[in-house]
Amino acid sequence: MSLATRCISCGTVFRVVQDQLKVSEGWVRCGRCNEVFNAIEGLFDLERDAPPNWKPPPAPPAPPAASVAASYDPQSEPPDDDDVFQLSDNDRIHSRFFQPEQADVDLTPAQAVKRRDKRDFAEARFNEALLDEQPLESETRRKGGGTGIPRSSVKAARAQLEAARRGPGFVQQAKQRARWRSPGMRALLGLLFLLLAATLVGQAGYHFRDLWAARWPATRPALALGCQWLDCQLQPPRRIDDVVVESSTLSPAPGGNGYRLSLVLRNRGAMTLAMPSIDLKLTDSTEQLLARRALAPSDFRVNPPVLAPGSESNLQLIFSSSDPRRVNGYTVEAFYP
Image (cartoon, helix red, strand yellow):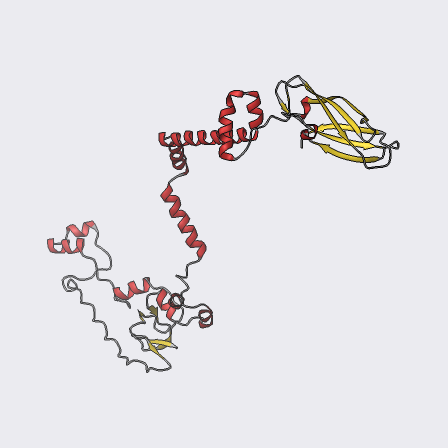
């Protein structure tokens, strides 16, 4: 589609572009007679429509003649003060308040104002190739492309509106401090602190329940009740640093069919400890390992399997070896599995 319009002053037909008409709200200037007019009124399609009929505008009416021209004679120069005093009263009034008529000019006042406010438009022809590359705003909206405003500008505008709604930075800081110092917030923070402290104490009690029950016997009922809920057991604490092997012997058993292991364990701590297990290693004359076994307290038939504080416990065990080589050495070590 090729749009065109006709000048209302000289009748010249020239092409126009729709986007440029939108920018100027339909107003254009004729490239021939410099007349400014609304091109939308005479807009038509060059390919399908005929140019509208054109009628020359009526000539502007002649300016009215000066009414004061016949009442006095024009003077080239205003009279001097001495000459004025020699005139009559009527001539003196005319000389003071009336000046000679201005010589005829080529332009009327309306034409002079139009020339003064004239803005030069290029002939109403625009780069159509550039416009074809960029779709019109109306087409963009029909295709669902939004308003045509860059997203960065929209985001910046939204950020400014949000900042204006929140207020200055010092106002926000003051509101935040007042919110944290309010009685309701302080009560909520205190309740949250108590809840976290109780949770921490509960976790510590579950992990160190055996040690707490041995060191503070008054806590045993509460710990036992907690173990019922959590399906756990209270046992004597295990502190391998307080358990030492005072002495040990390995001798042939009666009848010569096995060996007898005798141990003396001592508890150097101040609380009752669980009986540890014993790691037994048997070696031959070349110090090669013949056998190794972990002996639990039940193997020594200890009941109850505990070590009283500062006490000693004698353990004995008779066992046989299926290895034909003669047992020549051994090592024992206490440990908690």
